[in-house]
Image (cartoon, rainbow, N blue to C red; front, side):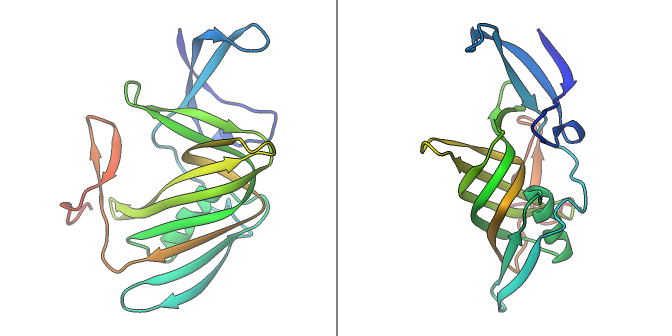
Length: 204
């Protein structure tokens, strides 16, 4: 049975205002003996402004070929909203992203092509950000951040996936390298995804 609901967490994740998800009962049982619940998030969700008030930006290099920024997040900042706000303010048309640091909770996703939803990979505790990689491209004239994250735990295990939401603790250090030529995305109805398409010259 599949039903729509708002994902809520007692661990401080801000999914209640961010994600409308689907829950589907799995065939396997968890440690409690009850059927496991798989939760899904839509491919797109609105990002709020002002979710990264401690974020600071420093220009490391500026030339005709590229501009490199250090985007430093503080405790409590939300990463995806912050990077999107930064990209809009700096008028980023194309960029690559790398980062390391730590978070205390996050939602990552695994794309399910049949459902056209992200299966949620929740992180509900302190974790090291072992890798943050991604890019920025334009969709309908506005910058869109696409990033993947791998988070590490005390026993050396990891979780990874498409970045949906992540809250920093105590810091996250992101290097963004912007380029003068725009990359543009196009919505593909067969997948429901917006993907970079070099043939798109103007998506406005």
